[in-house]
Amino acid sequence: MSILSTTPDLDEKYMTLALELAEKGRGTVEPNPMVGAVLVKNGEILGKGYHQAFGEAHAEIHAIREGGKSCKGATLYVSIEPCAHYGKTAPCVDAIIKAEIAKVVITVIDPNPITSGKGIQKLKEAGIEVRLGVMEVQAKKLNAPFFKLMQTGLPYILVKWAMSLDGKIATYSGNSRWITSEESRVYVHKIRGQVDGILVGINTVVRDDPLLTCRLEGGRNPRRIIVDSNATLPLRSRLLNTIGESEIMVAVTKNAPQERIENLKHVGCKIIQTKDTGGRVDFHELFRQLGEMKLTNILVEGGSRIITSMIEGHFADKIIVFIAPVIIGGEGALSPVLGKGIDMMGKAVKMSEINIKRFFNDIAVEGILEY
Image 1 (cartoon, rainbow, N blue to C red):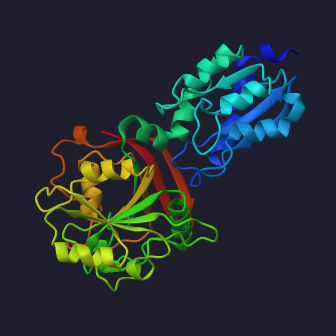
Image 2: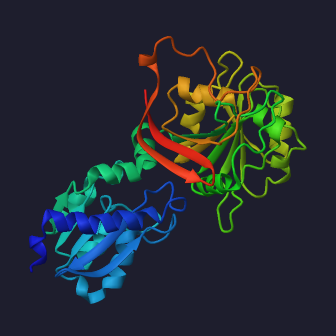
Image 3: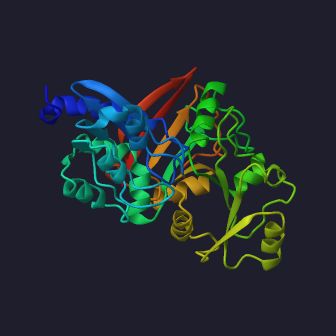
């Protein structure tokens, strides 16, 4: 069978494999997108690969290297438009053209303006057949954080909390260790290892004195972002004692005392200043600055005021809620989302693309927020 007569069904089959390969790069390729590639000729897979780490060879290069001299006349399936610019590596389109690949099947145009559409144009000019739009929806979902950063300049925000059956994230005294099981906490550490930053409020730091690191073997530590309007982060906190493990960013307002800011800088913190919005950090300005630093995705772990700001300000893109089979009770016990609330159920924030997981006796509900 001629490789140029591939059917849509086969295209989806091979593209599914390319997307599965791309997923393997989650947490190591950012701020680049996750990319997978599969090289096929006469119904046989000649090579495959994925972008494994930022600055290293892209997926297409791995597939072409594996295919060797057999690449001539083959079809390449790639989960996003091949790059056409010099960055950490040479343009992938040049390698595709050099390998004399006959056809390239692509999910979606790269939203990065440096490459957007240019890769496809260069392939066509070289006489290579291009099919665009195969499994486009799935590809955009896979790389939702990358698409958001490229299109808005803002990082993708995942909000997480753990609560009891009666909707409490801590007792009336503030104690929250541990609501959920060890299995749930292991999964959270896996997520931490896949994001660029983890964000909490100063109240959470003062109450729990957390490390905010990924404690799985081989996992990378995210940058730790503390929302601390008045620069009151305790200098003896465990965060500052472990500043060598991952960067600590402290978000303060422009009205924060300069002496405290200098103290935090002295111990190695990076200070991010925003305008003062009623004594609080301006989140839109904070996320804009984090986006400029190329942080692609950020995990927000609380506390209640921060979570509320994420929901009310429509900053959160996705949430994951762990529900433990315990009842805390008490009017003074903390709820995850505060604020005024809504007066009619029709105004409630809804979730789509629901995914439910089980961890020991806990249930985790994950989904995309719809405002």
